[in-house]
Length: 108
Image 1: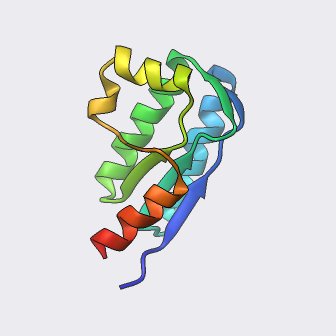
Image 2: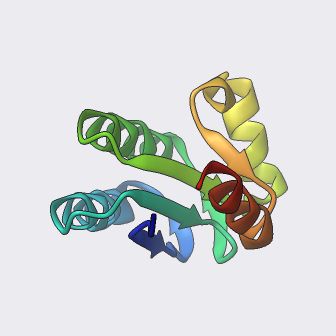
């Protein structure tokens, strides 16, 4: 079974100025009929509570549509934000795209 995967690559600072754009990307991906969304944080340098809020909203959107949702390549600051808020319990956070590919292959 082939999985339709959408990779979203936010850049720079994920805060209130970019939250709406990020949420729009997630909604468009869900509407296009993808099975899986990967948010690659490789280019994100900083994320604040607004960015985290956008991710929580995105998680609710994808869960309602039964779309798998993964995050990868989070830096130390973003990882710490997830840990301090215990949000790492709700998101599947992978080290990089290679681990994501392995995860997909294992679930196929």
